[in-house]
Image 1 (cartoon, rainbow over the protein chains, first blue to last red):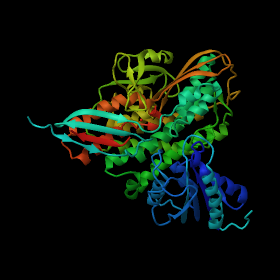
Image 2: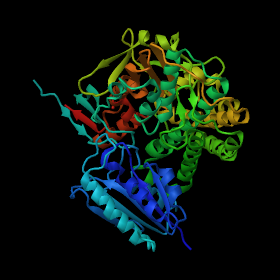
Image 3: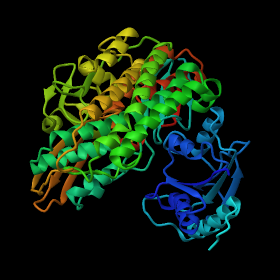
Image 4: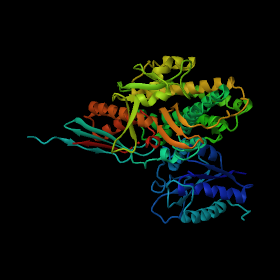
Length: 154
Length: 432
């Protein structure tokens, strides 16, 4: 059986940037026995290690494009690069889009990789998610479970 | 009367540096008129945030200043707090700190050498483009970085923002067996580091030299990392608590970062070039041997060759980590007992980018009354500007795109960490 991994990415001290982490935490609560869940900051080697060899990787991150806050974007990055408008590079030199392309270049992408981006509202210092981001988190959790084909929902 | 020939070059976002900032260069009739680094990442008011907090919180709060060098912030903070409390930690704890710090050097240097800096020398837009043609090389860099991560996880609890560090020592000391799991990966990393030195030493270098004072911590018997005296290649040699008598900060309107100067007004540089100039003879035999093999001179004043020096420091960090693990004895207690007392304490360590200084004033209950943090990139900012001025003078006849590339590369030579310095990049060249 192929491995499915859910990876929540973000900084828990930068407001809605933590949305991806929150999705991963909730998925872990719901179906910890069925899915491998990783919560981490955006660090390239950690991400590549987490998804290397997986059949499916579901990566959840916060995004800042011009969409309505709380919107859940879905991108299949298995064969195409992420759009740079939604996934701008981070201050840690390699953003999620670059990390995926780096992994593609060295042959370390999973068989399938889907990225969910939750449109954030505020990215200032703080540990609270905005109401819009919280709604986005709830929707993204359902999308993750659906994509992963989980049986024990709720 | 002829109108001066003005030339403008502008880049809105400088890639492959840590954090966000901008740079502009103005030329009038082919001569450099002005060079400035601007910082537009919001000021990070960590110093103000620390006031009113417990002295015990400083390592965890300050580690949040940077995702690349959190250990540096933690170590300078604990040194300063222990200085206030008059406590010296046991030798096993000091060595465990040094081991954790080796993990951060490996992580940070591997990231900079392979992902941020090497593409400049090989003519690639970035690490992704380089990876498409040199996957094995990029894989080597990632493996090195991963070994640093593993070291951070075993000792620090996780790979970014370690949670196991406290004033006085650690919450829990690792067992000999836990550290033993790191030996094989570190031995492979040490081989990869040796290859890194040989690979980078083969790049083409423009043969330039920086002429400012080189400042680093030094220790009598070791390559300084987690402690030391503040020294320079021009004879400075003082204790950390005398730092502010010899260096001062001034605010420059264009930048959120304070600019550091030597008392008397001089420019100085800290980081790998300075450490290597002052400490090369105390590197491990293997690190010295590899540096010798590729002809890396002491001192090395060529900022472009800092990539080779980082490689030598990678060899050293792996070598030193292996030595520390082999000699490790589990401490009787993971942390020293300590009581707060009123007073002022100072702490300095060698972050991957250079000397990181902290000073705190506490009241009798251990509440922080005042905090001062001087990160390496803020100290290096003037030296970077001066170097850039010389680079533009030498290469002003290049096209705007070529000149922009040379300037960006010159900035990346210093591995600036703008997140840290904000208390610091797009690039603008104005040919006025």
